[in-house]
Amino acid sequence: MPAERAAEAGNVAAMPAAAPDVAVRLDGIVKRFGDTVALQDVHLPIRRGELMTLLGPSGCGKTTLLNLVAGFLAPDSGEITIDGQRVTDVPPYRREIGMMFQSYALFPHMDVAANVGYGLRMRRVPREEIARRVADALALVKLTGLEDRRPKQLSGGQQQRVALARALVIRPKVLLLDEPFSALDKSLRASMQVEIKEIQRKLGVTTIFVTHDQSEALSLSDRIAVMCEGRIRQCAAPDEVYRRPTDRFVASFVGDVNVLPARIERIEGSRAIIALGDATVPVAAATLDSVGAGSQVDLFVRPEQLRAAAVGEPVAVQGVVAAHIYQGGHVDLYADVPEAATGRLLMRLPGNEAIARWPVGTRLGIAVGTTEAVAFPRAG
Image 1 (cartoon, rainbow, N blue to C red):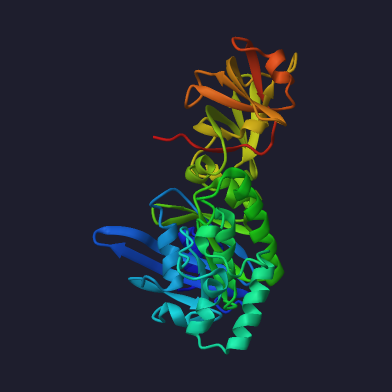
Image 2 (spheres, helix red, strand yellow):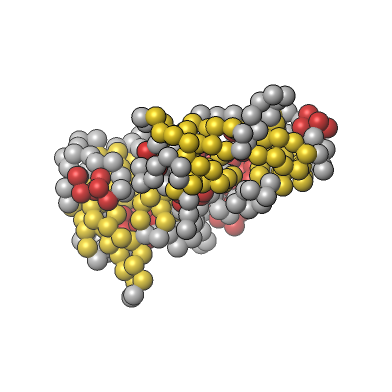
């Protein structure tokens, strides 16, 4: 399908059909399960050496898309290419894919070395080369010395490293990661995220990572494809997705956000000036092209973009402090604000002085301290 049509569909930015830096391309992918449409006309080019994250809620189609790339499922229509070769009808074992499953899927009766070398044995690689490549893979994931252990003798993090080594030892063209951190505790999850990112960078392997965890996606990805109801709603770098979401779903799903009713005061070229209480807030006009001055809009503001109004500063809304959550380097302050979509705003204030300065029950004026809020036409 032409790149122009993909751009019009809003799924991804257009990219030349023969772009040499594209490792994986999905063109016009449709997948149905009975009467349920799991994927609807998905277009996604993934660059060579890129870590692309598929992010979205349960049932959005991200794991289905991963399984299509792996070859475990076949699309009802559309094409999949890897390194410029059409693989839509190619079986999984011929796609040169390495996959790390959510459950790790280690063989309990095999030791670590045998688990890691399994794919090489199936490819009839000579024994000496298997031993060398398994040793290299275990060194890469910092498991040298554990070759003779069985999976049940390993911690969760060590089992994950074995699964990663097994996926990498075959030298895949594409590495697929299906929510690999979901079974780990918070601290181990954070350390494994760093390690996997370092390994991916070192090897330069094209990687597709599936998660529903926004913080994982923001911290690990080169680009994020945000999915909902079988469609890609936005595909961009993490900073772009967070700061400049293209629709209400992306703005609401990625990161914490407050939604406030407001009004367009005027439009000045590429900027719209939004009136909110006594304050005005500049936003990009691109998301408001269907409405004009005087129209009601919903203003989406991140918690860190709100602050207590200084004396004499225009106040956007008034609130009453309802709760504090101490987070170490900052305080999450919740204020009851009737105008807010949920009746409550979240402010993320640096340091810990907010607890003493604005105790529960304090009334405070709230200002919007950013030029990067976004607005969309009023829902409904």
